[in-house]
Image (cartoon, rainbow, N blue to C red; front, side):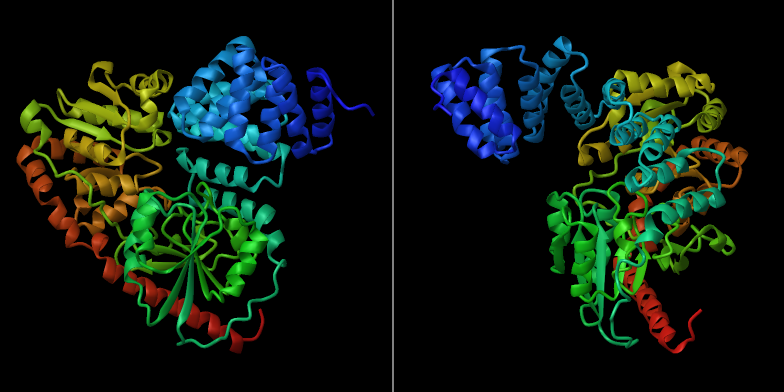
Amino acid sequence: MAEPKTAAEHYNVGCALQAEGNHAAAVPHYETALKLKPDFASAANNLGNAWVALGRRDAAARAFRQAVGAQPDHPNALASLGGILLEQGDVAGAVTLLERCIARNPKHLMALLHMASACHVLKRPSAAVAHYRSALAELPKHAALHNNLGSRLVDAGRPAEAIAAFAQALALDPSFAVAHSNLVLTRQYLPGLGAADHLADAKGWDARHGRPRASLLPPPPNTRDPERVLRLGYVSGDLRRHPVGFFMAGPLAHHDRARFDVVVYNAGSADAYTELLRHAHHTWRDIRTVGDRDAAQLIRADAIDILVDLAGHTSGNRLTLFAMKPAPVQITAGGHTGTTGCAAIDYLVSDRYETPEGAEQGFAEGLIRMPGGYVCYAPPETAPEVGPLPAARTGTITFGCFNNIAKLNNELASVWARVLAAVPNSRLLLRAGPLDEPATAQHVRRIFTDSGVPPERLALAGGADHTTFLGFYNDLDIALDPFPYSGGLTTLEALWMGVPVVTLAGATFAGRHSLSHLTNAGLGELVAHTRDEYVAIGQTLARSLERLADLRRGMRVRLRASPLLDASGYTQALEAAYREAWRDWCAQAHQPPR
């Protein structure tokens, strides 16, 4: 074969090598082609693709820029460069390029997918939904796209539609454990379902994705000594500025090192708060990119006695890892929203308010009832000071909810309409990041106006960084808790900012978070057991500005004196529960097999 001489010949050789997967060998041919013909857009684009395959993102970006410079409407170069800019955090630059690509090529799959991701970063879930639907028009049988669509529908406050998308992903790929977890979790947002429904959902997940993994490892070889120092492992993808991060700060700081060796298996991204958690100086291992089998072997090598899941079926969970039973005792705590349904999970951490006597039948796990709350809250040091009662300044009561908008529904909205009707001139403020997007705000506004909330008494506002967002509670007099999925961290943050929360006790674990928090804070009078009581509590609170002001001024003192912020006491009780679970496992050595 003759040596290539022209730009076209070098380009053709590069294409042939790249088709064989030999990207490194293709690079010099594309570079030579571009030296001979600097405006050779296709050569620059292919060079970018080769650099991507070789993991050289910066070099790829330079090549794609050269392609776009030579041919401003080159669709693949625009989409590829947009994707790299998105990875690098230049979201605005990425959107500009992707919009150019889609304007010229509305069906360009790569551009649609990158644009959906950009919209997610920008908290524009309705726009992301539209892009995923356009992509699915081109690839209707792509399970991962249906799953991604479902996730963005949740963000947009449309859980029923999300469930249909997750179900379609699962129909296309029955082994898709992530989509199945998303389905299990999202069904908790729907009114009308009870603990038995959620248990059946979770057990369905376990039958398909959990139990088949149970025989992949031999039984754990741990020594059955009930009183020795225990090796304790925590698995989480949320040890950052996230509810789980705020709930785990206390235990990680207060574990008794003379009785517990702690290993943290970090399965997610990190931020500045992660570094604060690491200051507890336990052993940390990064398993973000480690597969289940290798992670299980790592846990076995670490001789973990008790392995604790901090996710349940929430995003980024590693329940498929737990299904392999890498540790002899396994517990779910902190981040779960109810039963995992998993036979491999032995216990679930709860409390007597979340799971009163008789609730056991709704759980696949044994229940550990903590003497206080099921979690312990660590308020961020950056939280703003509590401001004066807004109604004293405005003359009107402002009710509000800063929860995930997927928790909003027509049944809830009709009750909140009754609260507003019972308190003349009051208004309702809803605040969440996605409400900055007009399409999402319109959808949420319609839920409430269709349910009887006067449009002039409804205000919607968007998000901000966490510290600023906490400061927005200084605009609220009374927080209204959603149902059937109650507020968790959101309720604790409202209380920390001095705002009382009215809740309706639900029939499920996820429906009783606020009941637990309020009762532990000595505010059981804010817990309603019927919708009429919910309206009455809101009305009664609104009638006494003096009572609201007193609650506001004393709320932080109240919380500091409650079990909710007693990190030392909570950790001691947790360790006692861990020890009892360990003793039970040790005792099984002397029992006949079932």
